Length: 135
Image (cartoon, rainbow, N blue to C red; front, side, top):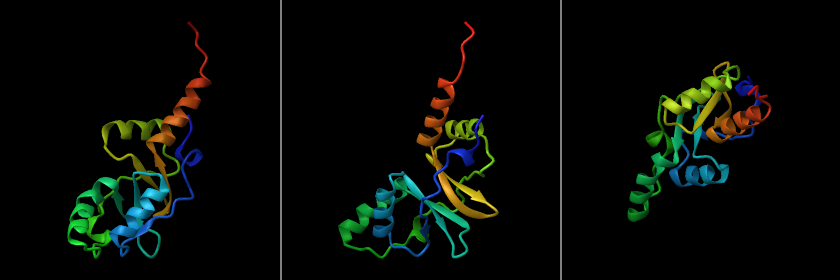
């Protein structure tokens, strides 16, 4: 069975804690993901900001025309994450029990990419197509 390192997305730019909400939302939307990891100046994972986290604050910010909210105020500060060596079966099982749709991938305490439910489903589908039935 494959591992995370074989299918994760390496070209995802994480958010920084001091980014304003409107910019973070633009970056989440441009990424095609449901949220983005948040890193510190050393590239270490410090949080995760999802679409779900943003919507209530976008409603309030839009109503009051207030764009001062920063990622650090909204991010989830203890995000679940995986390593490149995590098996796809393990993360697939994690995704059935936990709500995140996107998991940061961490190596040596540094953010190196993300893996999404879509990435897992695609990899599992490819694996299934190579199965041989002995019926």
